[in-house]
Image 1 (cartoon, protein in one colour):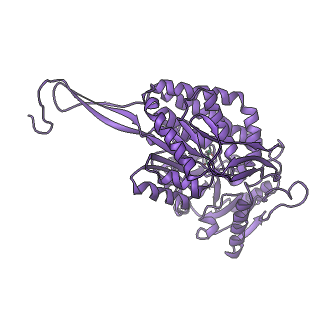
Image 2 (cartoon, rainbow, N blue to C red):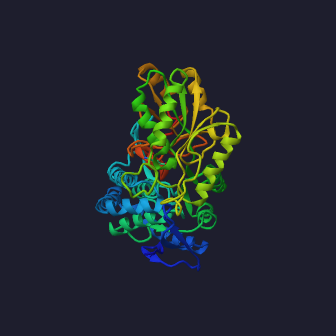
Image 3 (spheres, rainbow, N blue to C red):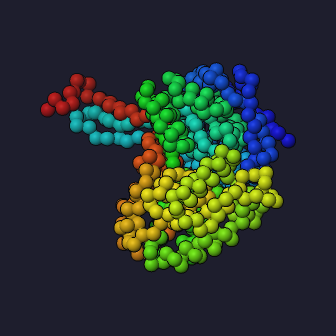
Length: 492
Ligand code: UN1
């Protein structure tokens, strides 16, 4: 059955002012799951009006009370975890274990950030004058425009929405058109948790209409965007034109460095999970394995064997390791990169094609692919966002780090070694927002900041202790209780 959804404006599921709709399909078999309105510029304006009205009372609501609503939503999501996990697997194509994990990530973050409502810490700071007191307080930035991607359709919206709500912002939210169902379900959980009307509004539709209007509108004081680097740059310049706060989480080309002393069995499992889990469609996915020359041939043979043994298929089948990629566009992009790899004379070791035949024909399945590549090849430098791993050879730790850093991105990274000195050096040397020691590049936990360096992003880190930085302004407050004019820097 095709579910019909509306926009969510001012506490009501609403129709669009336009007439157009779009379908959401299951990438495993082409089944149409839902129909959503293609929102218009006027719809964005209606949502912004609601967010504007709702802002003053929400700002005045004590942060702990704001957190309570978010905590209640976490409890509701927990009750719905089974249903949402299956729905997510059907909407996005990730295997059901990972889909459940993603729902859990949203629950975890809501629980975590709800508690922030009882902190929202400022500082007290010494002053240079007698009978004077100084402190900082945090205030909400204003209306937040949140634009989220299809690869984490509930976890990433939960990071942005949860942090914005507890900070006291009101919201206009645009989920990705490929996966708006989980976004809508997140909104429902907050509605059922008692969020006041207008505090959170959702407008579905295209990036070029809805996304663009959110990014450009003067009422939006903070824009938080996760997605591709080209769109991220456009969003950044929209925000720059009016000096809005902009938070960007963009691409990755995340390396795993495997040194000759590492526990190779442990590394094998981690590489398979990071490169081919979620069909490689995580910003944090490992797309480069930098392998020490002493273990190169032997490890690579085993890796190819293990990769060929991965079961690709229906994400709802618990025995499947790798599901489909999100859709036609995604499939074509990945296959194009595989062709580029062949043209660049990278050596294709396994996979490299679309899967066809029984169970595959109606979906978008790509067999897990490994290339032996050189660091300057495009497949080893550009984000492919699919189950394609480039293997690169390094003669030393130093060379491995040089290769790791020689890309435009810096989100996640990993090194496998038993040498504690090298491990600690790597923390300093690898240019990325996240580094794992003896663990794969994926699987960040919500209580730590998430984000990257270089072209991976800009602005405050999401999640973790920094989550509220994106949505709060810091005000410095001076209280002079001396009863006379004291002049800082002048009064002796
Ligand atoms: C993403 O791919 O944008 O660390 C988010 C991870 C997940 C989040 C990934 N917790 O892999």
